[in-house]
Length: 356
Image 1 (cartoon, rainbow, N blue to C red):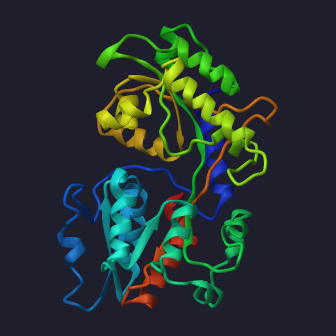
Image 2 (image 1 turned 90 degrees about the horizontal axis):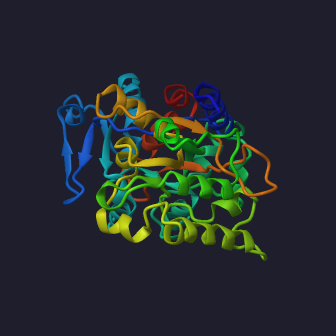
């Protein structure tokens, strides 16, 4: 399928799933956190609060979010007379662990970026997040714009975080590697066909090995998700099918780098794709912007296209998955009203326009 057509489909899917849409990327942020020490390094812009006239809010994010969230923060700061948001970025791979420690210690964070509903639930249960229910009800936010996922995210009506955007997964691939192997990308792959294609695209050994595909360890029940089956269902056969396919890819066909090797070598999925070591990569929409940024910066000249996510037999073509990403206010903030003012901007129409 042609890049422009699938890109249009992907963008449409992302933007219609929620009020916000966006693609991941990495640029310089207002502040960064060293992945080894966890100490903040603030630049002049972050520290400048006009002689103390503005309330300074600390907003923690993971590094993949920098490219688009930084633009929202910049425009909010430019239009706010009373609040300055200091964005602090933590390395993507260590973000969740470091945020848990910070939240448990009651660190001075005011607003935090949260990856998915499961994390929101954990922070809610530990009392780390402020209950926003009444603030949202009394605000001008039109929550109907968030779509159908809103109700499933707040089944009891209590709101502890707001959606910043929604994710949308698709199949990235290197057309040059496919051409070299004499393989063509069809309009729609099944997972069985995906596994066979990955085997054909696997070549070489050792550090120079070309992997047919690369599967990150973030989502293991993908085939079940595409069929509307979750791990708490009475029949989890589809979950088992997902795990069995991963075992085939990792350990039987050896067409994908195993989990053990990923951990041992601290491999980075984007770098391996950009270095042309990977032919197929199921990933989220954030990778579009990451690739565009790195190509424009001259960091890589990789060829890439996108196609619909492979599907289980019998599932409607084009079926994929995604979830809300969230931002919330810490229960220890000293500036709840100011923090909510920024949260409304980030998760409302103004922020949406910048994201998109």
